[in-house]
Length: 113
Length: 113
Image (cartoon, rainbow over all chains, first blue to last red; front, side, top):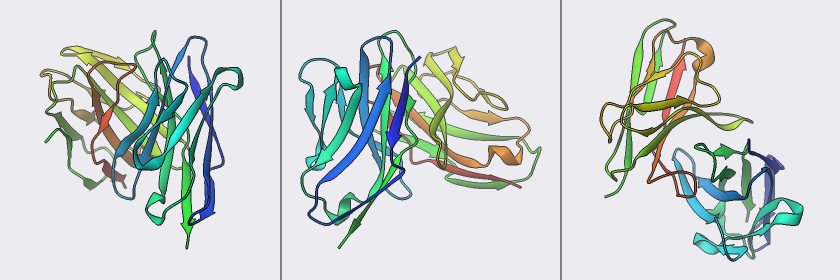
């Protein structure tokens, strides 16, 4: 079975600073990896995903993530934080032989002016 | 507009009073799923359905029931709600797991007194 660990339940950055949200996964088979964002009082929406191919994945709103098999990581980055990026972010993993998706506990991002 | 809808959005009830949370999607998706979101625990899957009349347990199925009689609908039933089922519930759908994006509903905040 797959699992996900998100390091840091809360991350605070200044506007314009680099955003780095960490995600490590565990999977015995090649994983499919996802980052979702949840704005207050809303459902989750997909930021980006990795299935196969290029390991650097670009998503919406200037976010990107890199799949590093050797480190079992899929960290989310954005070069310059904007106030509108304040939200909760979830990393998730699934795999070809599974019918479910496992989510991390989430990281709440705060952006200070 | 492609969407997943849930009703009600907010519900306060009392222990033991049966309730149903409806979920409907208009994207002709085969796969549907229910999650609960609790602080510090992320999203945990309750039940999922691969297609009509095909359902299976997720990680936390105790105290819940589901049915999938039509492709578009996937109601969540709490036969005898208890306070530990107070949570934020999300319905999601996708074309086919596991590599596809899941589309989430807006959530149902349930309080069981």
